[in-house]
Amino acid sequence: METALTIKGLDVRYGPVQATRGVDLTAAVGGVTALLGANGAGKTSTVMAIAGALRISGGSVSIFGQDMTGAAPDAIVRAGVAISPEGRRVFSALSVEDNLTLAGSVVADTATALDRKNAMMQRFPILGERRRQLAGLLSGGEQQMLAVARALMSGPRLLLMDEPSLGLAPQMVDAIFAIIEELREEGISILLVEQNATLALDVADHAVILANGAVAAAGAPDDLKNDKLLQAAYLAA
Ligand code: ATP
Image 1 (cartoon, rainbow, N blue to C red):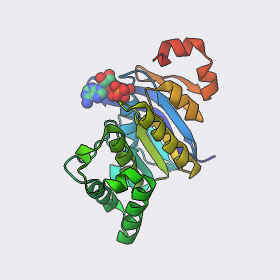
Image 2 (spheres, rainbow, N blue to C red):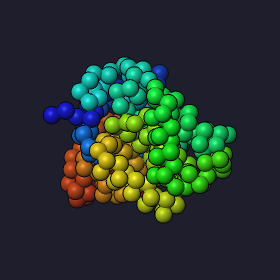
Image 3 (cartoon, rainbow, N blue to C red):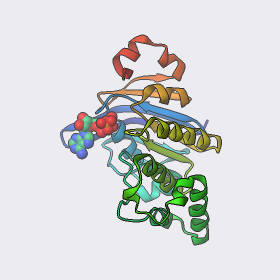
């Protein structure tokens, strides 16, 4: 069976610091896979390695059946992967629309890029309303919408979402999770990094828990939710 993502034995190091050790992870096509764990467990390092933004020191990464180990970020984008990064990373000094235009520059066909930009402003009406406003003036939740919209501009089949709910008001957290459900219905595969394990396990089809850079548990969300030891050790809020 083809997967959206298969990682085997992933090692990421920052000099002497080993951020991940031998991480195995698969994300099914069309599913939401939650990647959970405490601060410093290695979640962001895993995601950045998949995106090609960090050099990996061991293991393999395969995307929709294609070996992409060590590939550059632009090749990863062409393989169908986009990322909405931790901390949102929108360009604060550019308008909402210019943020989308810039993200669309990876699309070869300018008409397609323009169509997508307009589709994003319809899909996220707040972005349409604020298209001329500087992105830095948006609320945290609105910036998160923009970060997701930017990622979608490349037309990904696999979306990596790193802590999309972090620091957001409860209503905005609900809005983000509603978008995750919508994207899944559209057939986009999602790898969702979350510190809000309860919400993530509610939306996910499969979950992986990292601890100290290694996989501590993986399985069906209901099984992980019902495991009191796991909950206490890794998922307690
Ligand atoms: P968080 O939720 O805090 O982002 P995380 O699970 O995403 O945590 P990582 O950010 O991947 O974890 O960090 C994994 C380990 O790598 C930690 O020990 C962290 O201190 C270390 N680390 C992360 N980035 C760097 C870096 N640029 N240089 C050195 N060590 C780093």
